[in-house]
Structures are given as C-alpha cells and as structure tokens.
Length: 298
Length: 228
Image 1 (cartoon, rainbow over the protein chains, first blue to last red):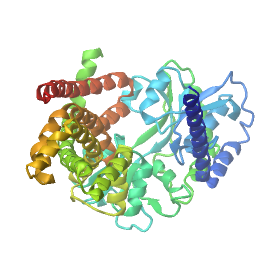
Image 2: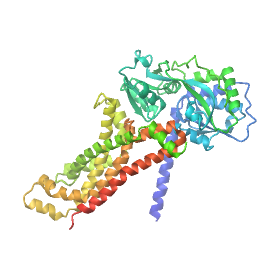
Image 3: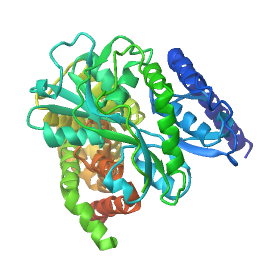
Image 4: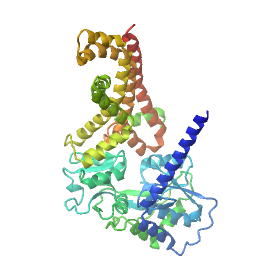
C-alpha cells in the first residue's frame, strides 16, 4: 500500500515538473516585437482609455497557437486578433482585467458559441453561409485571402499561376487545403500536415516549394523570431476570407462591435495592429478590400 | 434538417466509404509487413545465436515503447523532409508508403511478442524432438515450432490486427490526408454544428470494421488450438 502511494506521489511530482518545464519552454518563444507592438496598438488610442461600464467579465475565444494572430505567450496573449478583441472589449466597457481569453480551436468554434462557453470569438473566423445558420457574425474586421509563403530568396513563385509542378503544404482538413484540391489539383502536389509549424519546417528543408493558407496567418508565422528573415509572403491572394466576430445568435452586441471596429479603423489603431504583428515580413493586407466596412447586422 | 437529412448531407458531401477504404488498404499492407518482420523477429528472439536474440530484443524494446505518432512524424519530418529519402515522386503514393512502413515497423514489435507467446505454448519436448531427428534450427522452427506457435498465437495476433486497424488513422501524421481521421477533421472544420453526428458515423464505421475481426479471431483461436 505504501509503495503504491509513493509511486503515485512520484508520478504526481513528475507530472508537475513536466508541466513546469513546458510553461518555461514556452517563454523563450515570446516575440518581443509582437508583444510590444500589440500593447502599443491597444493603448495608443486615447479616446477609450477608460474601459468601464461592462458588467462582470467577457469571455473571448481566440486561437492560442497562431503567432501574429492569436498566441498564448506565457500568461500574455498577443497577435492581431487579440489586439482587435481588446479594442472592441474596451469599447464595450471591459478593460483588460475583465477579459478572459479562452482557446477556440477551429473545430469547436460553433459549439462554444452555441453552448455559451464564450461571449465572442476572434479566431481567424471566416464568415460563411453555413456558419451563419448556427452562429451570428459581427464585422468583418479583416479581409484575408489565401496566399503563398515561400523562401525569402524565391523569385519564381509570384502567384497561383506559377505553381505548375510545384509542391505545396497546408493543414489537414483546412479550407485552404480543400481549395488547393478543388482548383489546383491537376498541377500541384499537396502535403497535408497537422499544423502550419510543421509545414514551415518542411518548407525550410526545401521538400515543398510553398505553404498556403490565409495571408495574415502566413505573415504571422514568418514574423516569429525563429523564422525571421527566412520566408516571405508572396502577396497575391487568390481567395477572399472575411474574418468576422463570432457571437451567439441571440446576442445583442453585433451593432456595438461593428461601431467599435469602425472606430478602430478610423483612429488608426487597426493599421497599427496589422503592422506590429507582421513586422519584418514585407506583408501588407490586400489594399482593395482592407480595411473592410463591417456588414449590417442581421 | 432532421437526422436522416443530416446523415444524407454528410454522406453526399464527403466520400466516407472511400476514407474507410484507405484505412483498410493501409491496414492490409502494414499487416503483411508487420507479420513478416514480426515473425522473423520472434524467431530471432528464440534462436540459439545470442547476437540475433539481442537484436530482436532491442528492436522490440525500441519500437514497442515509441509512440506511433512519433514514428510517423519522424518518417515525414525526419526521413523525408531532412534526409530527403523519397519512395515516389507522387506525393500520394510516397506518403502512403511512409505510413505503411511506419505502421508495419511499429506493429512488428507487437507481432513479435504475439509469435513469441505462441512459441511458448509449444512444449519444449517438440523442439528437442525436432533436434533429435537432426533438424537444424531454421527447419525445426519452420516445420515444427512455428506451425504450432501460430495456432496458439491466433488470439494475440487478432488483437494486434484490431489495434492496427484503429492505429491506421495515425497515418494522418504521415500526411495521408484521405484516410478517416483526416476526412473527419475536415468535416468537423466545415460543419461544426454536426460534431456529435460526425463522431458517431466514424465510431459506428470502426465498430463495423473491427467487430468481425474480433469474432473471427476468437472462433479461429478455438478451432485451431492444439489440443494437448
């Protein structure tokens, strides 16, 4: 009996120290520039410095694993989605202390809104008709497009028309992978990996010629310190993804969120957030479609 | 949409049987590879040559204790991406082969243990009698030990096969994106409102695949057991 107990104790200690290791290991990944840029972008607007008026706290779903968009960095959260979320929350009356960020993986987003686990979602969430049947959207606050990430010295890929005979990488089951299969299948070979970081590893080794997904996701990947200077976003998007703010269907916040987004775009904080989170990649959002005008609420 | 319409929608939008077919193919080729390699390893582990015994034991120790996902990812990110070893210029074929090799290498360790447990059911007298009539080790194993050993190993081999069927979904880590877990991921990604139904479809699919294998191996193991 005593042996059994000490084995459990040992296992618990091992698990704890392991957990400690992983949190520690996460810290060096911290992107200084992104962190600084991020907080700057939200605090630079004087008009909404006092974020009061909201009751209780606001639970916001973001990605935890997408550098440049939504990224958990120790106890901090960085990225463009996070910056927009903070700005909007402030306009709604919730300061940073009143925000609770929750991880919202792609596959769980509708479910989290339907069951009320989160109040709103800023997680590269494209507005589509299928999704509108079960959740509502405010925004869009950004128009992304599927683009290509190539090695920094690559000169021959300037857009989808140069992909004949090339190898691409994308994430298993993603919309981007599906689009490649639907429209480019006869010309390219597609490698499907569990995450974009794996794709970037393979791109670096030269076994694939390009990684493809939404341009701002690629820019965020390329802007991480580990990848800095190695890759570039081609900048020739070939699809249109309207990133919206996912809210439950019975939510009454849509108008307020749209007002906040419009204000963020007008006072320059939006532009600042984009620049800060994609620094050093030469990336600029598709100027024809950005910054977007939020659509009317249903 | 009612339940039937939802099921109909999912089956018409995604080729679910084709996804299962990929897993069956993966299982088929990996099972053959694992059976051949595992039997060879099992024989090595009972052979009179110490270095072969050591080799067999090391293989089993390494591959049985390494997570399958790690083996698969090492195949794609290590062997293919870094060492640039390519089986085929066609990505689909290339990663299918990588997945089969990964599954085969991993399950060979388990087949080896199943075969060895089968060999242990053969009384020592059988091996001694084989040596007594002048058979060297290999013919003794082939003609006397293994035929009896396999009959005793049907049940554990069946368990390995069942594990292999389900583990074939890990091929997603080796970039085989047409198999069930990848298709399921795509389905959930695009139809987040039907998560529970999608899970149920795949769970039922695997039950349909696996239950007959279990029934078959149980009845075979009874039928083939050497009565002593």
